[in-house]
Amino acid sequence: MNAAIIIFPGTNRERDMAIALQKATGRKPAMLFHQETALPAGTDLVVLPGGFSHGDYLRCGAMAARSPIMDAVRDFAAKGGHILGVCNGFQILTEAGLLPGALLRNASLRFLSMDCHLRVERTDTPFTSQWRKGDIFRAPMAHGDGNYFADDATLERLEGQGQVAFRYVTPEGEATEAANRNGARNNIAGILSDNRRILGMMPHPEDLVDPLMGGEDGLPLFRSIAGTFATA
Image 1 (cartoon, rainbow, N blue to C red):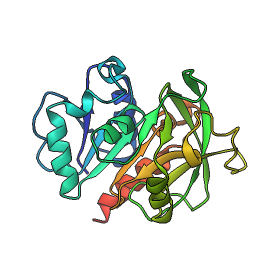
Image 2 (spheres, helix red, strand yellow):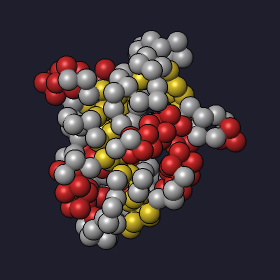
Image 3 (cartoon, rainbow, N blue to C red):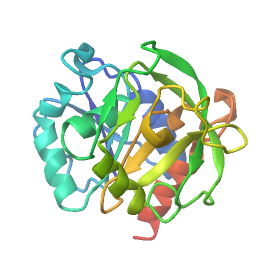
């Protein structure tokens, strides 16, 4: 499997993402600067990692979404390519129009840096096949603008079509207000595109893929991706 990680000025999670992908796939991903205009030949997966692209000026992800490489990413998506966006990457995907909705300031108006718990809402996707539906896993969050918002019609469509991938929950699996630290609508932590080949999520599964990191809760996501291409 050939993965390409896009790096913008201010990206800071690309090495964590590379470690997670290499651990799951056995292959080192390509690192691609945002001023490039084409993806490497044979790319299977594009990853937009976390950080603070362009210093989060204007809106988080707004400037990155207009970088030269994003035309190639949009073409890749239009052809059915697989894309993973985490934290700032999720923000970029919404700003680029590749996922619906927007990431607003956290309800507390404070930057959140802590662990959270996520519930897996479906497992028939390229990103979640190594879990069982309803599984709970831990993931670190580190964001100031992670409050997922969509209008009522979009939210109804996302829920009705099963495009919610992950939801903020208690360790016991309840989607409570207290578990929803950033105020996201319907406790949404991650969503899928219509064809389920694009995933955007706010917490960082790449930061829990090894016992030395404090656990391997995030590893099933990367093993799911690896398994998708191993059987393709």
